Length: 192
Ligand SMILES: CC(C)(COP(=O)(O)OP(=O)(O)OC[C@H]1O[C@@H](n2cnc3c(N)ncnc32)[C@H](O)[C@@H]1OP(=O)(O)O)[C@@H](O)C(=O)NCCC(=O)NCCS
Image (cartoon, rainbow, N blue to C red):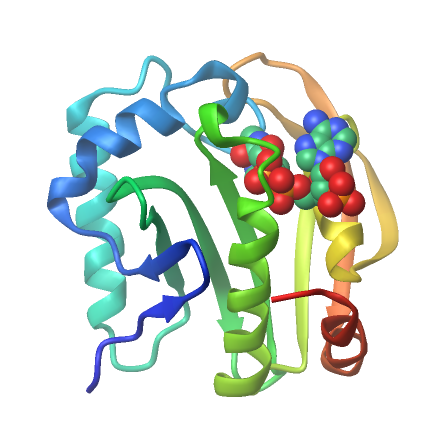
């Protein structure tokens, strides 16, 4: 099967490679990034990156894929600056769950907006999903802002639902959902 690569103005979204470990250690090794994710070891070592990348490469090889983890490569630097994934894909129900992170040095440049547009187009147009869901810590201003910008609707709050692996803190979780028809409408308002 042809390799799946998503291209935007500034980014290339592609499957992980073993040689990405350094960029992964730099990006996700940052406490402020890792603390917003579910279960990332800290400090983050080469061995952690190797195990993770290997696992994700294996998932890309599966025939009936339930998981697409794209690494976000910044064209101008030939560097992986983040990741964005569609996970827990349930073809019968037509839904999946998204997650993402970006190297702190590159925050607030619209990179995640650009990556999310490409991934949402892929999820709804190519995979023909009906709905994307996303869970975000209530305190995570950046991620809540990103979901709302994409047109996600807040569907509920799960109280005291998650415990952060890094801080031990208990978090309330905002549960967001984006329906295909909502995305098609929203997409027209987003440049790119
Ligand atoms: C969430 C994250 C991926 C956002 O990436 P980013 O590339 O900086 O986001 P963008 O630049 O595309 O910004 C998207 C929107 O969010 C807003 N935003 C970004 N960071 C923000 C912040 N700290 N506070 C408030 N709004 C913020 C932007 O202003 C933008 O909206 P606008 O265009 O209307 O101004 C990044 O902050 C990150 O990696 N955080 C740590 C890991 C994480 O939280 N992952 C998600 C777990 S659910």
